[in-house]
Image (cartoon, rainbow, N blue to C red; front, side, top):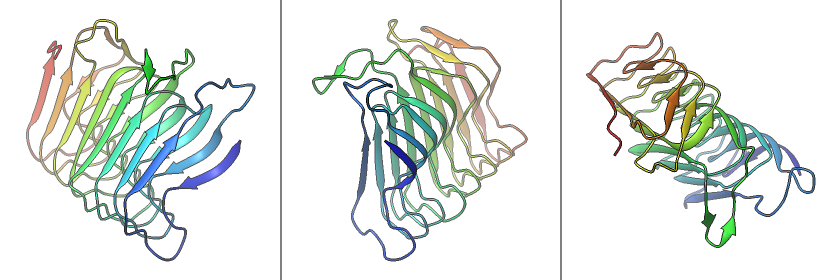
Length: 239
């Protein structure tokens, strides 16, 4: 099916007081028989407030942009975003244009499945992902972010922070894990901080060397962004 924008919350009025849960799944289908194609996917609302968002992307033929948060609205809880399969352009843990997220964390995990999950085979050999940001696009976030890329191929960069969107506390980036059957390929660079965005506290980057290939560079800080605390880079941990 074809969708322009999908939101977990409301459009321009009202508020979702409960928790938002989003599942995108195309298990058992191929690109030619039943594709899922959308330009934007938001965990929160468009211009209407909501609470927490939990998003699980198990497969989609094409998603241009994924936001764990809202487009231009507030969210009073935390964000958890899990990606196990699909073709996705850019992933943001936070909001798109504006609004605040009051929860204490944004967690983004990318881990292509290499086995069945809940009795269904979600393995797909054409998984692809561009860049990942722990924070928002141009909307600041006051809490802490964590980005894990454990078994995946990215053509772009990984940022613990946002894109022109500051992080109010700390950021953490983990690339790779202890499983020798897993492989991580990062086509660009890895940044503990953001892209032209500040991190108000510290950054932490761990590069596990089991099956990890980073074709660019690794930075404890960001790209043209201030880190007001410490930067910590650990390479070869494999934990």
